[in-house]
Image (spheres, rainbow, N blue to C red):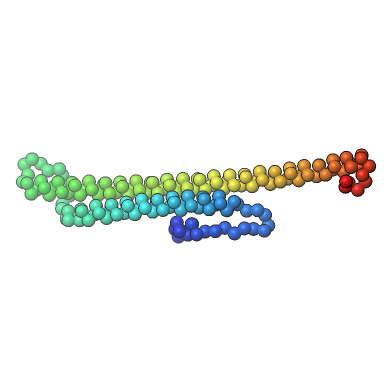
Length: 163
């Protein structure tokens, strides 16, 4: 599993075959990914801590029987027992909903990170393609300029093309 520190320590090597990605851009992106993961880990830890805290508070009441809402004719202990059972069910539902929301937030953040990664990769690919196109146009312009210079030198009577 990759943790934020692994991402921050990651360094990309350069290649001699052709130019690679801008290391500063890659490092900045990895810093943003590490920050996102760190925030998600913190949020997850906070939810787990809150869940544990609520379970500890509810533990003494877990043996209470599950009953209907208290009726007015019941004794105080019976009503208290039923209210505690209702509170337990409500607390369990709140904890379950908090877990569902936490899972949904984590899922959405993961999808957002994946979408942004794919966008960054697509933009990097397009930039690399544009750069190659610019290099090709520069080479064509250089070739054309050299041909024009040779023609000018030839018209001026300078056969070897130097001045």
